[in-house]
Length: 87
Image (cartoon, rainbow, N blue to C red; front, side):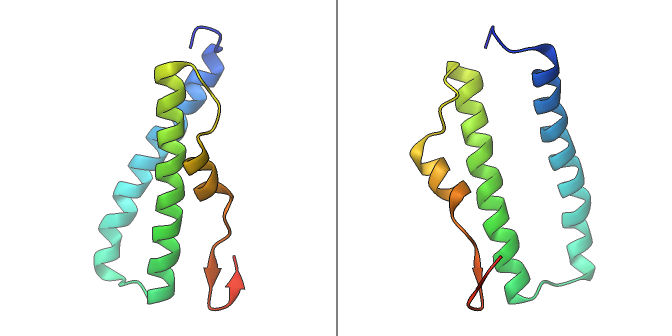
């Protein structure tokens, strides 16, 4: 993406590095703190959103097209429902 500024690239690198380094530490801590069903469902929902955003970012970096693909938009725009409420 030739039109991107260096700060945008650094921001994306920071976001990805921050996510995987923090996730690595926190996942290891789950051994001592099993998740409730609600917590597990919420974490899985958020991981689906992270995956969709990462695929969109990969598509943009690879092709230069920053348009959000419809499948990613559907995942990122939907609301999570937990026990009849929206979170």
